[in-house]
Length: 359
Image (cartoon, rainbow, N blue to C red; front, side, top):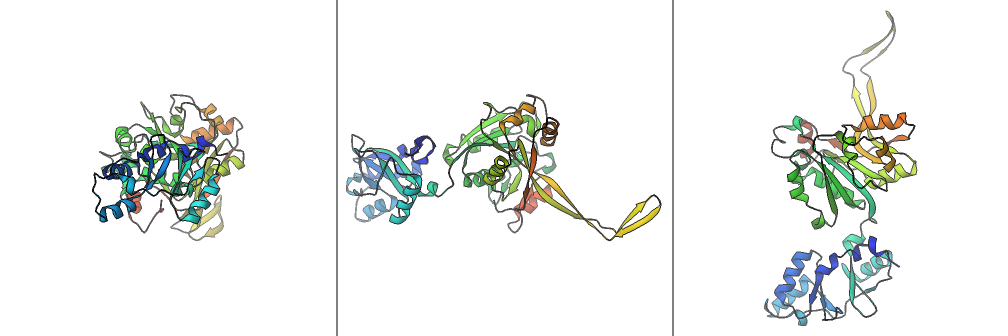
């Protein structure tokens, strides 16, 4: 049987689509607009499904001469495809694709509505219980004047705040539980995202009284996570698959995993290799290669044992403390497009649609 608690069909949002079969066309239009689920489930007094109604059904009815005050009873499609409660997610998806429908009501043995499958959500990866913590408390002083009245993660890139792009990409990997650490102009972030319900996700907030650094803010997580979790800077745009990072972290049994990017820098001069005063070799404008911190991490709950609550700590410092304790810390080599938007030049690069990540 389907695990109702973890399945989108039973998360409660389907209740917004319910409407008495005696309701007016005006009521149906309002219902479609407010639910955002592209369907009305017309029910009788006992909750039994009478039929379904879509925007297209309403338009056809208005063309036939119905008014906004007429009842939807004559518009309702009374023989919709429905699913029993025991239908698996995979079978529901196959049924919807075979019938070319985008919504599939779930009914009990008495035909009472108890859920609703959405094709868009079934096409997404399985939802992950893991938390994603986004660091959004910095003042972004290097990006002034852009950040004088706007927190850095909320700066728009392609018409959308950077942090919204991070959240959208994480949602594609099944993440739906987010915690945002805020400080500077944090109220703007809260006002924009709220509790996440309008995006069908859950968002909670950590409010730093004073800046604690990335790892210090992790120490404020309450309750303590029971599963590995992702930590991401709110000004990092990347095409990374957060789910793959988390799976890599778990597979290697690490306490902490740091996503890293290969950074190449070509020396502008020929380099002379010496030993004392003797020349031992030459290298013409060598390329220096190093792995750099990408600002994205996966942590096991045990990583919190190395964090002192209320004490400022950055991620490299936390990794160093865990290493001293003998905990396994590893890197996740990234090859995907990545951009740390920390300086005006970086922001300009992010604004250019021909450059940077597509997230």
